[in-house]
Image (cartoon, rainbow, N blue to C red; front, top):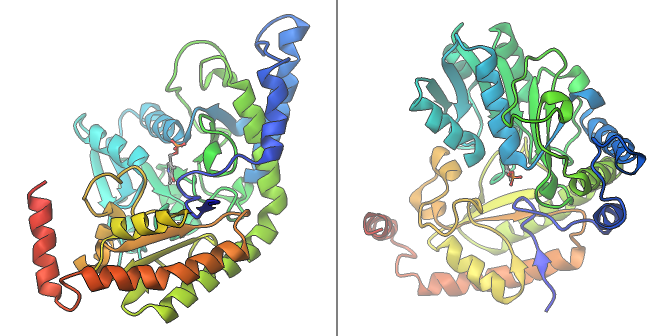
Length: 400
Ligand SMILES: *Cc1c(COP(=O)(O)O)cnc(C)c1O
């Protein structure tokens, strides 16, 4: 049975052209780019090309790209750098729906004397910019807000946010791990000071990422040691990873326009057909401001985990909540922040597409989902009993 992979917001397949680009750097070209000899030194040129490719995808200058090990490192490094650059300021603004790579750093900073404002979202996962405005003070060092949500695909109005942030003189960091390669970005006309991206979300391997740092923004490295990355990230370069990220960035830029159209069409067909065929379900998130590849659908009265296990039998990979919190019974912090009712909160499934997704794969999901939901609902004792369902959920959570 072949796999139908609709979990691309968790990770992606490495593009074969990326594998091909990397191979020589795992075999023949194993030198250290910092070496004085030609054998190592020649790698500097390949790394430079990769840096240009990543910069091109972001509309940035190559000097503004710092290679990292992953999105998590980029988020950590940016937050640290922003705070170290303005030691007198002790306030951070973020949102309730960030990735744990931002949320958990902020939680730790709260134990170290920082005050953090976690902006709320409405039923559609959108922010209230008046709430942001009211939270911004002269003491605000950093505003760190994601470009697009990994669970719902909801896109935040980043430039409107940035304008307000810049008026108050705070540093603006954006976790764009889900936006890069999915929507057009241009740092030249942006208010963003630092932006995080990750390789394995854009068909490069795991273990490589990049942080965009606008020229002129004071930066302090998270990793301290050698002079690599112009002193912004010490450690011998992950040359194969960097080459792979460069190639992946080039491909994302090349495919961007067609991928947006194609994935939007496939995603909308999947979503609209499921909504039409299955009663008692709804889309979670802002459907007008959304990534082209993502749909998150809540199926009332059943458990998302049960749906995933059923889909798994057909080789279909999807997700409930984020991979980082799965394995726990806790409902997704993102859907919870949106104030979804309990009946929907537990039965929400994310399908995330990519440029490899085919019509036939979407057809297959459309074919099997209605019967899966119907079967699970038939087993659910709470099908038409929201109060009973709610009570059972509370008991489950209380007994964890
Ligand atoms: C995946 C993801 C990250 C973490 O990236 P890693 O490379 O896996 O560390 C951070 N933020 C968002 C929004 C993500 O989707």
